[in-house]
Length: 343
Image (cartoon, rainbow, N blue to C red):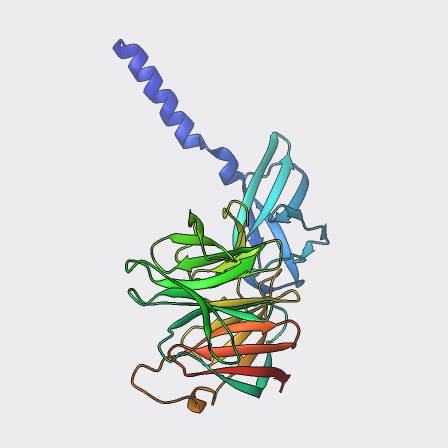
């Protein structure tokens, strides 16, 4: 390349950069009053026109859902909550572009407070570091954690009698379980691996790997989708056939995001989730992620044998015929059948 062409090329590049090679990004700016709002709240929006371009039309959206604008306002009518990207598609004299702004959409309501009533007490293995708990046909299935003492078993919940048990390899820390279509799905904590077993004989059918989710905590299902908690504010949707993560909801209150969901149970559109390291449980809308209620289980831990390995409340299973919940904890010697009561 001769010197003349070199200088011409560099001059052209400098001119292009000075004028803004990525000009569309600098033409407009999406503005809102604040960046934290409530579901269905009406929000003032505007477009700052940095280059005085003629704007022909603007379309606002979140998660590809169009939010109609009227008099400079939009209603945050979105099905799921949490960290969101508000996008404005702008048609203007020279073409079209998009600008966006990161916002938080929180629950419109304060969580309601619930308490509990103990209906029955049953024996529970004091050596069980409970991670997952679920009923199927009046039989209780349980998984436990800790490397070297992680297993999956099915029991008679009334007597504690063990019908069948399979131990995990010592390299795995067992976590939550769920049962669907004749299969048991089990998580491990930090190995990024889950297991699939035949419900009848506990024969291992397959392994599966996690996608974007950080760790394995709790599992539940609604008959079509598997829900997975991972220690963050997200609860993931897993395809039961492929175990691919196909999206998520974010857990929120009316004030902030929340990241302590552990063991899960799905009942009638709600996810019941143990709060990690707390004597409480959340009631989460499985569509929006809003925490609609908090169940205070204080005092339950004092009802079990006190010993040096006694640990936190964990494990929730719903009995559909009895219409009651069963809860226990890590290294608790009792399993409690409870009714949930609004305070």
